[in-house]
Image (cartoon, rainbow over all chains, first blue to last red; front, side):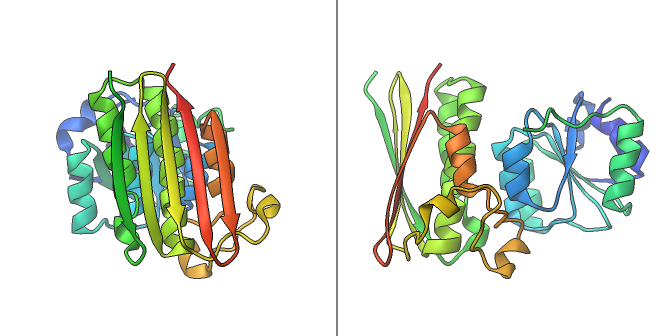
Length: 116
Length: 140
C-alpha cells in the first residue's frame, strides 16, 4: 500500500512531506522503545510510536524508514518536523491507540518484518 | 583512494543532539556510494554507541576511518567505565535510569546491537577511567 492509503486507513493528518505519500510501503513496526526498533526491526519502512523526541527521527533515519506515525494524538515538535523534512520522511498523526492503529494496518495487508 | 577520516566531539549534556555524528557519517557514506546495507549496519552500531556515550558517560569523542575495504569507528569516553562487561553484553540487561527509558532507550540492547551489526567489535573499559569501543564493518 502507499503512505497515502495508510493516512486514509488511520484517519491520520499529514504533518510533513506530503509529496512522499505516493511511496509504496510493505512493512511496519510499532514501538515506544527505540532500542527495540534498532534491535529487532529489519527492512521496515514505517514506524508507529507514541514517543515524542528527536531520537525517534534519528532512529527512523538509521533504519532507513520513510514514514513515522504518531499514535494516541501525540504531535511531533517543530525541531522534529524540520529533521524529518531534511530526511524526506513523511510524518502522520492519528488519534488511534497503538494497538488499534497497528491492527487496522495489519488487517489491510501491511506486514511486520522478519524480526530478529 | 586515500582513507577518509572524520572526528566528532560528542557533548554529554544534550540528549536531543545525540546521534548527530552518526547522521553525518551516514550522509558521508551515502555520498561515497557505499552499499545501503553497509551504511545501515555502521549507522546503527555507531548510533547505539553515541547514545550510550551520552546516557552513561557524559559524552566523549568519535573517530571514523573509511577505506576501500572497511569502516572503522572508535568511540571513546572518560565516563564511569563498565563494571561487569559480561552482564552489559547480555540482551535486556540495563543500568540506564528511568528518565532515559522514558526517552525510548535503556532496553539493554545497546552493546548487543553493536556486536550484531558489526564484523568486528572490541571493547576496553576500566571502572573510573572510561570506555573505548572499536567497531569494524567490512565494505562488501
